[in-house]
Image 1 (tube, rainbow, N blue to C red):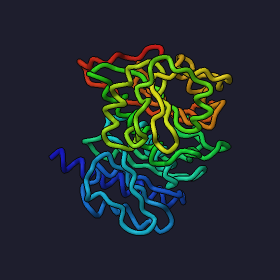
Image 2: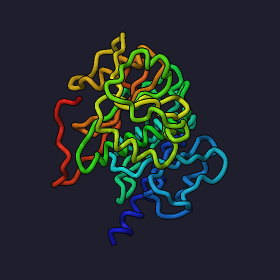
Image 3: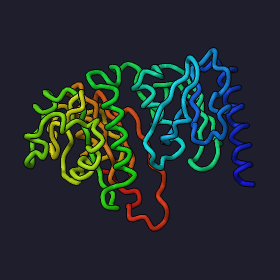
Length: 307
């Protein structure tokens, strides 16, 4: 009975989202495809005048874009809030060139395992909480799109899973490594020193456990735009400060703001206290992706001042 009600609700919400997209002349419709029950729903309307972007956290081969102007965006299978899912999908879509600055989109989403129950209408770059891109260089300038997405996925998974059941923070700096290293100091022996580049490639599937293992080290991971990990445990000493940080953010976030203000890099931080993943560019906080609250009995701590 509940499954049938969920399916009926999802169908109604999807039809409403298609109507909103058409009537407002939005540029794109994003659909959380994991909550669609039938193949016909995945087609998500005629779409002649807008792009259709299917968003999934599953590895289901049946979830595929069909037809011109349709795209597929895969996200890591971690527990995100509704708005966290919206922002994560928007960032990945933007990094892949599927969404562009100033484009208006409709996103129909919901909680994983339930039904489509929320419709949002937003413009890329207009809402600060979503994605501040207008007036900035292209998000993945000097950084391969696949590399940016891989690091973002790793950071999000790290925020959700921690290490050995305990919450940990993290800082990843991607691109412009020559200038980044000029503003850095290696505080410990670099665990990546001496290995061949193909063994240090972030796109390799076996690098996820390596990154998790070294994430307990103080300092940052420094990664080339082509995906080669240069160092871990690197202390950043940027000579330029970023913009004023939101209240409650500490040294890790200040370092991310400063290094991106003084170099052409992108920084991704993981908050140890809240599990929030933040993206930094040009000294600014670009977007914040919230993790959904963990279930009672979790070993991860509640909110406090962030590092």
